[in-house]
Length: 378
Image (cartoon, rainbow, N blue to C red; front, side, top):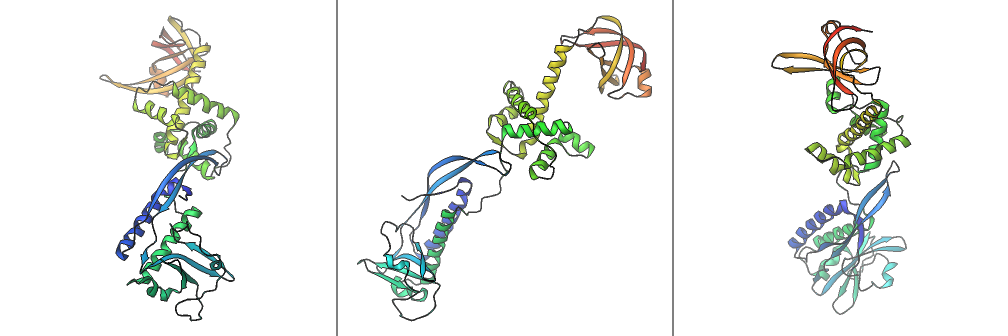
């Protein structure tokens, strides 16, 4: 069985073409044909960015038989190109080679014997083994069919199918471009290193581009100044290990584990990949801080340092503004913003000083402050 290798993504288009041809064949009283996928293989190719991507290919075979009408079988169509011909054999008839003289024969018709300019002619074979070359308008006498031109048109369509298979020229449905997960994560790391992490929600609130949007712009070539470094590739590897160690406690963690278990992904998952890289970065930063952090001293203490986070908490008593302050001694404490600071307003990055009762948490280097006094910006 002779096979042809095509992209697997085009297989549905091939099957649709054969289905359409078989509908025409049924109307013409011709035998149906089919296409069989004999094998499927994966090949590694370079994409436009030089990344290795996996592409699936299918080995397919067209099966069927050429119609026998009035003792004649349609054997081939000859395209006459100067002194030589292109021989388009009917699928399923390759077991018997066409006589070699048809490779160079002129555009003649053995039926009408009329000398005329013909772009193509047809070769038919009789049951007794004899061959005839006939023009398009004469094939009715040999095929004995009520619609010989319809048969010829059907045959040409079959040959177009074969040509398309041999050239792998079927239109492949638009599908997301696939990128290797490690390289995709390295790109996310490069974007975050350059621009910081911007979630989709934050991007909508601030009317700016998210990290995933920027990744897409880089891949399209709209942004050229973001380059992947060795450190970004190391972060991608660390992220893969970080995701692998997640417990999958919720849908978000489950999705990350699924995406990073694949060999490739696409822009639809850029937000997940970017979030995973940012999560890994935060985890590493927290681990480093915890390693370097000092224990939170207990009791009434003076605190001086930088505000690293602010938030608003709401409960049955109303709203209260809270803040996290990293003390110059290396620990972080969390509590309600003192009234004097609320009046002047506080932002991340402000340096403040206050006295408060401190208590340590279970996490090294992190604790809480209560009953702050003498608060002021430094």
